[in-house]
Length: 257
Image (cartoon, rainbow, N blue to C red; front, side, top):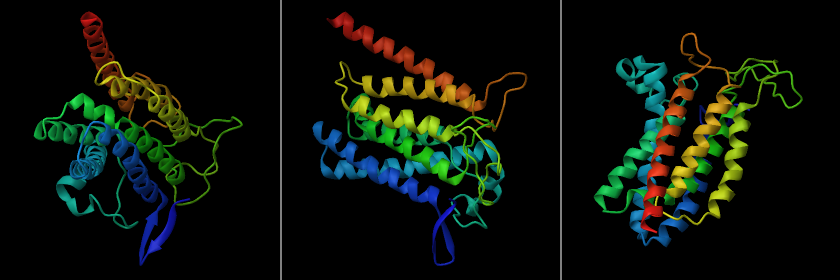
């Protein structure tokens, strides 16, 4: 459940294989959407490669800033060390989103392409990426749930996983992965009325889902005297921003009519 195979003396985690599969499968829906808006093959490849790098950097650095900042400032060689001996910590979904967002801004400015049009194009890839990422968490035994004596609880017994062993837990990774997976087919069929509708709808859906799932998840950080975690606060912030932007853009379209 933890190591899939060894590359020489280095163990390759299931998580990182799934992470790679996420980027691979995510390319195809983006390719189809990008061709529809007339992006050349060169620009499609450059954009997607840039997103892969930016998402990976953002996800890793944001996690370390929140949890282990000393690695960034004192032991930078460990930031991307993948072996069991040197690997410290994990990655952050919201850090990855920020990394991807910043590169999307750069790309749209550099090539004078509508930010919202490009964001809509990448939404399906984002959905697949987040789905596979949570499946990776499930197989890795990280980002685990609270104890739960329910029929569908998951029990980890591999001594290498991060989650508590031999205790039934909420399978929160699947609580997030399964709705994400089915949302892919919903958004695949969507015909947007305005630029940005797809990405904003998904942002509303995902952040609402994240707020709910966090109640069943083992908290990494709770705000004092509240039941809310740091990811919940982030999700709530992004949910409000997404709702406001959606309402503004929708009202603008209605006013034109």
